[in-house]
Image (cartoon, rainbow, N blue to C red; front, top):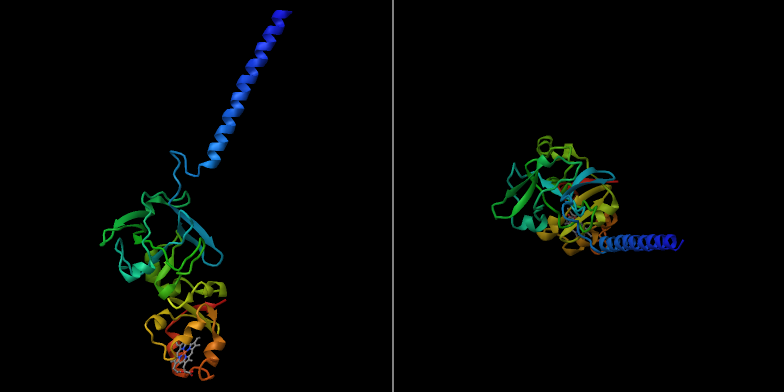
Length: 253
Ligand code: HEM
């Protein structure tokens, strides 16, 4: 009898020790997993991903969801964006390329630019960020100057070039899109249902009316354009309207 109690006792003690150890082990692991925010060895985080925009569809992003662009003036494996252009359109370099599962890894490569920097390419086209994009999901560079485009991974940047950018993408902007371009260095405005990028007029100091044009940046500036409340209180001339058409980038939704 005593022997039986002893055996049962030993078993109970063993179960407690092993069970407790397991609980301690599991808790310890969970704690470690929660507090450490880096991938464990052997697991690679994709450096290139795909996101979806409500009206523009699928497009390439970096690991953090930041939008990537191609420049249709570039050619295969050669970037023509330098100096001032690069300040606006920083180079994207993924380092070791690890494309998301939904992408074809063979579409991506790395080139060494003339200035010595590495740049990741998609179907031979160098990829860039846009300095006007502030947060994940921003696509403020889309269609700028009719030469900068986000990339649907199913499409080919060369085709965008051949088909002509206007034919390839019909630009429809919401007021929220325009709000992202509300500074003198990056000024879009809507006038009469059309959207214009007038940044160049401001940075080159070409507006005959001077600084007041900045008041229209990032807005529906129809009434400002038609009334000039800080000036003559009259609509802009026909000459002004003709000039305006050269800055057209799309329509207001
Ligand atoms: C929407 C914001 C704008 C404001 C508040 C604005 C304001 C003014 C003002 C105050 C003048 C001085 C003459 C006057 O008071 O009658 C002026 C002249 C002028 N502006 Fe603007 N402007 C704006 C946008 C533009 C744009 C987008 C263009 C063309 C791309 C433009 C082209 C001109 C031209 C050509 C003149 C010379 C006078 C004329 O031809 O009407 N402006 N503007």
